[in-house]
Image (cartoon, rainbow, N blue to C red):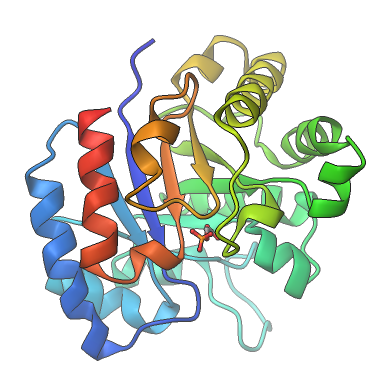
Length: 248
Ligand code: PGA
């Protein structure tokens, strides 16, 4: 099945009103690549100004709370980010799993809450370096998928991102063979859960994607796009990845 490629940026805790000008170049590149989808997740405070500045570009949140509302000081709901202009959110990013001790069950609850609020979701999975070295990557990723992917996931609203934690922000990437193998495993696992709908779910690769390696990674079977951290912060670095996806 043909799946549209998706290139998604993740600004993490970077950026300011001043850096939103980077999105102008990203939006222009996205307009020149009508065959693919481009999206950028930004800090909560930048969602509304980003959505106003580049209305043609999908702007998202990096996280949402699993509850619709309530006494949760410091948290932000899916409806709130949607009202601010977000069309999607990340869920279960490995930095939230590590820093905020989020579990796969938490990621599931956040993905479900986001979907109920009308957001698309990019749900992240991926093994740590210790798990990788112990030969446990496959089992860890299968278990994360099992526990975090909602039963009603489909390609319209749900995207999976495979991001080996040891490749995030390190400049190290798995081999293309390893990426292909893990993506095939992830899709097979999805198929056991949601059947044929797994064929329409995009599976992104994330972890040290750059303009230099994007073309090769995006050509791997079952790789339907990229989730990009550091290289999404400037148009100069992000646009080549968008161009590579458009050519893939
Ligand atoms: P990176 O981050 O591209 O900086 O490695 C990827 C991510 O965390 O999504």
